[in-house]
Length: 117
Image 1 (cartoon, helix red, strand yellow):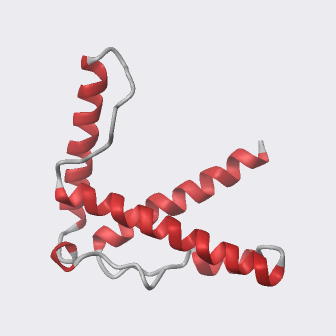
Image 2: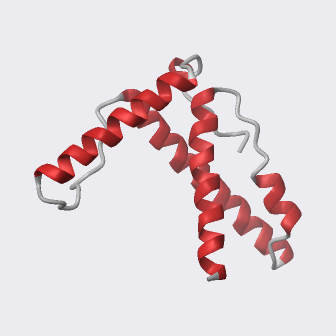
């Protein structure tokens, strides 16, 4: 994941600011859903540059993780627990990177829980 970095203009944004932007986005999406009777959102195009950067990072982390998993499978035919532990031990340099990576890591763990059911 070391190749995925936030854009310089977002590197100094605090965790509090990132979470406030995400909360505002969530609130606007809930408001949109309630105003149309629970219909599906047409496109998730955030107007907040902070939220757009979180989305970009989530996509980049997911894509990079998928690339690494494919490479690991090609080499070893199986994904080891140590490989996954290394993959998920990424140390973010900026709060926005950590928040975005946490979304990806949570999704990985949630998917694993679903497979066990």
